[in-house]
Length: 240
Image (cartoon, rainbow, N blue to C red; front, side):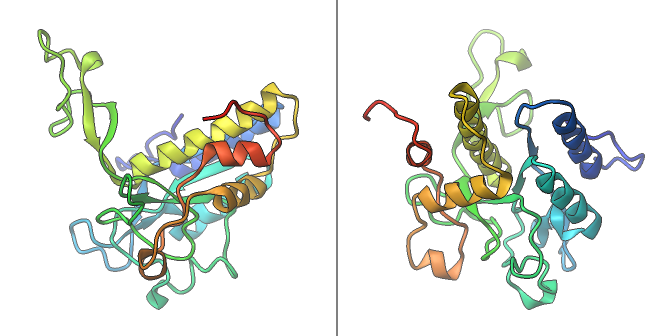
């Protein structure tokens, strides 16, 4: 789901989040909202440098916080601005001790090494990482995302895939999948679903850590370990 355009060609994240809140109020099912977007920071350079998570905006932060307090799980991209969210010029907007929306903020990592992927933002506010490069997904007919186009009908957008998607958008979708899997497992076994903050803490606690020295210099959090998280919840899984 997504919000409508606001008339200026921009999407309205607040409206999309409120759709999730209303859905949560109308059903007993868990609700997950994924925010694969970023917002211009105070020193955006006209290129990629300076993009920030959407909760940098106070109105968006307020809506996200209201959503998580209402039981909506919000998973948001940390942004591809190559910025430290601990930079004092950001006025502690990403200091968890003074401003925490309750959302899971996701950075982009390198598959295998779990080091920070190029251009991913970093900082202590980022909770988890997902793959920030080399991700297979639908490619459509977008230039640069047609490296797995099938032979015979290369113009059929419904059959075009890519193995080169990346950034914190790719990472956020992966983490959101883990969130949804855990909530689905709880639902299927008649267990109480963890709250947004409980689930965030669970995934961080059971995740595979980012290695040093990157974890200290450019932190993006651990990579979720879905099996470990489910086991901590008491869900018996087959070995493997």
